[in-house]
Image (tube, rainbow, N blue to C red; front, top):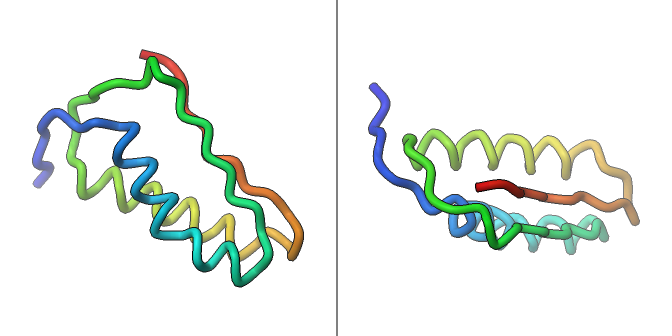
Length: 77
C-alpha cells in the first residue's frame, strides 16, 4: 500500500543525487543537479518516489559512458 504524505521533492532529489555521487565520480561521469526553487511539496509515498529516482539514476550511471553527463532536473510548482 502507498503511504501518501506531503513530500519535499527538492530534498528527496538532492538526497538521491548525493547518494549516487560516489558512483558518478568513480565512472568519471558529471552528475549535475538543477532543482528549481518553485519545486515544492507533493503528496505521495516518499519511499516509492525515492525508489523511482534511484532506479533512474542507477540506469543513467550504468549506460552513460565515461566522461558523460547526467542531468537531474526538476521545475514547476
